Image 1 (cartoon, helix red, strand yellow):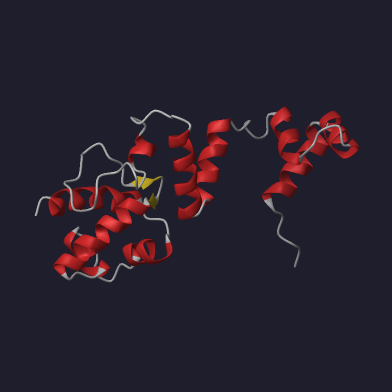
Image 2 (tube, one colour):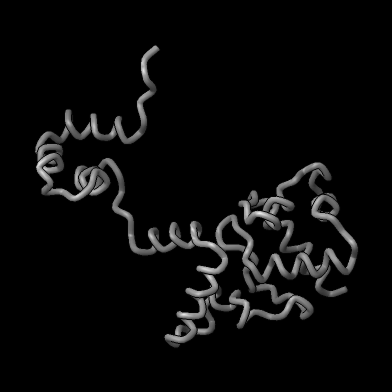
Length: 173
């Protein structure tokens, strides 16, 4: 059985056959990376700084995110930024009513302040993550929320949307 080709191998093969000048420049070290060579050939789009920041943010730990937000605040970044509003030092406390414009997640990952708010409500109401999923209309066996709370796992966007409504309702109780 032949070895399965990876996407990178396919792209390098394509560079070699369709763009031999760029491929030679890559091999000669004139182009720093295969990604840059693919971008020069138009095979892959050039990533913007914003794309790189989003990627780094998604990979960062909660401690790294908090340190970055503190650094931003210290540099005088705008406080109206939705990301800064979700910072633990600038966000409303878990006991205060939820503001509609305050984000609860960064992409598919819950923010630390949101996790704290959910855990407070769950403790007050003596709920498990499965109970919360059931209240939001998902199968009680769905362990997605438990994984997000315990390990910082990603959530489906439908769960995040339902969780926003659930938090709004439960913050008023």
